[in-house]
Length: 322
Image (cartoon, rainbow, N blue to C red; front, side, top):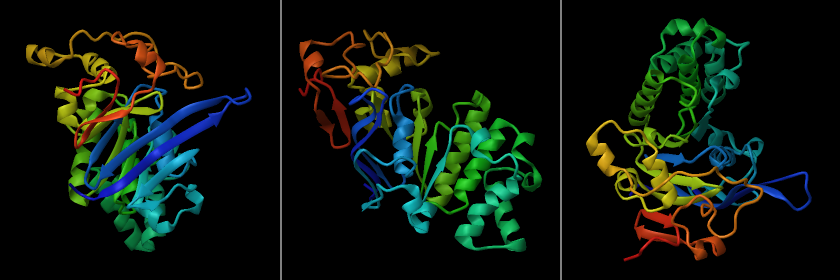
């Protein structure tokens, strides 16, 4: 196994509410390890804490408790306090490029900024380097002169990817980068990310609510529910042998088109209800209010993480260790 590049240890983020002693438990004690070269998918419904996790990794939010380690070094500090070298190595692509790209600047100016800061290039050398990065994401050189409002949503996201790539990072956090795009454009973005990973030895943390999207691209997947990781493992094993009822529910909700795919869908798993409020987290297992298999212990005691194999863990009372 490759060395661990990113690690989260008992990571928590609580946001205070207007009511005294009440908090939104957005992330509630997660442990995640991502190896160099991983395409790690973090998956869950809206409100499960995925983006909050990404923002703590990037230093946009400070953890309430726990640590974020990058190459074994604690980086649980605000972004403004981080070194230039760390900012170079760790980049993020946001969900909506329409708001993350400055509409007053040209594409060339947007991608030039990180190149100028981290590579200290200027003049013609700077422009040529920026055009190289645009061509890496398959955008023609003439895009250098365009503004974000002159190009489509998929092209804007490619500009955002080029901007992240421009620092020569080791790891890129991708926060729902395809959720606002149609299927054909999604495919182009995914193919570009895979090619860039191979060409630049990148590691990815890809955040999404779409489990089917991860089936053919991720190496490992973590399933997040109500601020906690409920299952994590290699993507193929997770699809063939899901253990947590929530994972099974997500997989069973994926549309299928063949009888072979239908045979692989978990049986006797019904999707019901909505994710509870992270302000009033249910006692015991947070998923018990939606789980058709829940027993008394599920309502009273939070389950421990159980190792099914060296790289596959589940947080569930109902898992049969035999």
